[in-house]
Image (cartoon, rainbow, N blue to C red; front, side):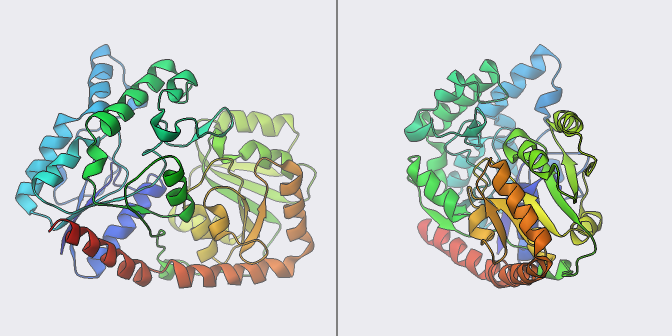
Length: 408
């Protein structure tokens, strides 16, 4: 089968890109002809059809008025993306298109091209963009469902997009254009949700298209677990942003005789460093973004990984990677996290935003080192059984077949 995998970023920039790339590599290993398509970037590896990629757009670095107008129009409808993906389709003639994160840089302008050429189309949902203009369903420091039933205008009133009326208005216009005027997302045959929570939440928000549950995969063979306790260290790795609950984590760790490593980068990094300083935390260190073996070493040397999110997480890779390395996770009871972190079995859960509850869970681990190893082994077994590549492949093939049947 010739499969077109689409994601705007085609290097390991974040969970959506990593999962998209992993899916493509899995399909290749099963003998399928996989073609990647997305945005040009200096960090991309070489791709066979990279000449068909769209021009690189970095919205935070736009300078001139002309650049900003052009980028704005591309978010609403990218004629370049539509033209280039059609040229690619004519050349490679794919049997199926598997979309992931393509909003803004690629835009849904590409969707009617697949319909034109009668190509079955699947979309794996990596966030809440289909029902939330700002994609996160998070506003004013807490989960937000104001845009339920297509009331996207709330994004403007609440300045949900980077606290800007202008950027929020653009996202509102985008949602009304794509969903209620052009109905472009109606052209997708089947939507995949990596978490049961996301699937149910989209239904609650008024999304009516067919959604099939299929969690992310993790290549178990690439992760060698370590159940030993080499010290008293906890770690968080990922994006530094308001919704990740890192301020709560800093407050919870105060007064506990344990080290905390916070690994990554993001818009609130400086604020977090100042907060740690104001709290007098000597046991917290901020490390730059790490990946691959370097990141694995940090996880393995930790007692557990902490995910203190205050937003509706989907199927976070931070949990899957920790589990694969034999480490339990302390995670907040929100979004898709409790589907993975089973309290007392694969880790511990706490009430999101509750400093004392999180502190109690950390202290519980310190008092019960035997439970750390036990939960780590349970966590490893959990991902082996539920998120292994073979199971993912078999389930994905069934979804592809469903989509092909729809297009007959």
